[in-house]
Image (cartoon, rainbow, N blue to C red; front, side):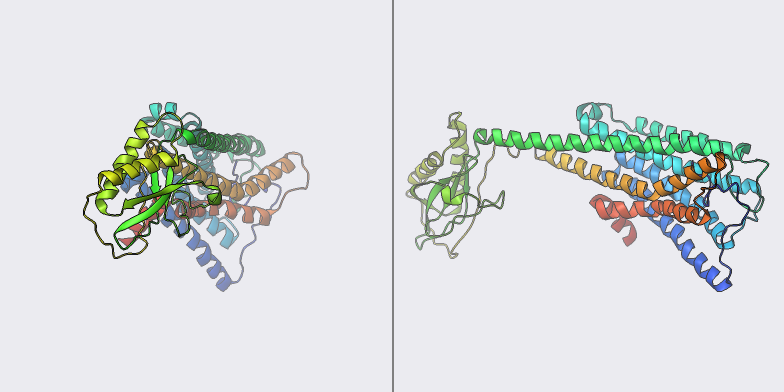
Amino acid sequence: MVNNSLGNYSECNASVPSVKDDDTKNWWALILVVVPCLTIFGNVLVILAVKRERTLQTVTNYFIVSLAVADLLVAMVVMPFAVYVLVYGTWTLPGVVCDFYIAMDVMCSTSSIFNLVAISVDRYIAVTRPIEYAKHKNNRRVWLTILLVWAVSAAIGSPIVLGLNNTPDRVPDLCLFYHTDFIIYSSLSSFYIPCLTMVFLYYRIFSALRDREKKKRANRKSNMGDIKSSCIIENIANTRSGYSVARFAETALGAAALVAPGIEEPTNTASGSNEDEDETPLDPVVVISNDKSTEFFLATVVEEAASNSPSAPTTGSMCGESIGRTHISKKDHKQETSSSTGSRFNLRKANKASKKKGDKISARKERKATKTLAIVLGVFLICWVPFFTCNTMDALCSKMKKDCQPGVAAFIATSWLGYMNSFVNPVIYTLFNPEFRKAFRKLISF
């Protein structure tokens, strides 16, 4: 897998390019040290946010905490050694420290990949089998999975500190990894295969979400006539006597919209659209009172009209007749004069529309979480694919004794691109997850 921060240049005895001028070296060291410091800060925020905020204590976020721990170790252990090697261009520390540095690099990178795989599997089950997911979801299983991820990652990195890197052609003043077979097979099993698995899972996840949205839209269209929601009443112009003159228009939902004559037809507040309003047939004019008690009776009659109507869609005239009867029964009600001209109110009683509001909010959160994690995966691939491409190519070229290695400069650039992924992850959570953003704001404000 990851051989070291600079590459598997077993055939090369040249030292790593370094900054010769002392002033320039100091500036580079300062700039490069800022990156791990910011990475530590960001990932500590992620861990504390999940620890303190109960709303963030979910299965997916526990895996994100594990990912943040891996990124934190990269910033605390791996990046400082990488800065040291890049600034000084040579390795003056003991060989066992070099092996520890490379092993930690391998373990943290592998852990990041396997945590992302675990998140992908979790998202896939949550989206494609939500009932089964809810039934078997528990924290014990999550922590066992996280423990397994770290155990496998440690097992992959441990051979390096156990003597695998002690080869005859090892150069003491270079911190490199020389075992080409290990690099090839570990890259396949710990990077390429997991990445292909994750891409496939997210493809299935988004396909399932797309199909679900299509079914929802189809169900909404087929159930339009069955929704016995009543009157949507808007834009009633008050007359001097405190009464409103209005007439009813049949809407696309089978409900009735109340429109005052002489003014523009109102826009449906639920959709914000006024399509096809010119084609809406209007029922006869009905006079209603515009006081608060009438508003109460309207809501009552609306519900009665919905419950007493046959299975066929409710018509605008039925709604109009119901409200007309309400006006007649309140004929002797004391008239009140309104000072406003153009009051607007909206009465809406939908028997089915608001029944699963909580489920819709939950589903919306699931979609947002899945999209955020897909972005995390995409950024991870952008950051690490170049390095693993160089890493595998270098190992293959060395194994076949061909002069096709990418070069030390390519390894420096791609290694630091990979390390930057540990810095970017908290930024992604801040930009795309409002709950994390709110938690970060709370933590920083103290």
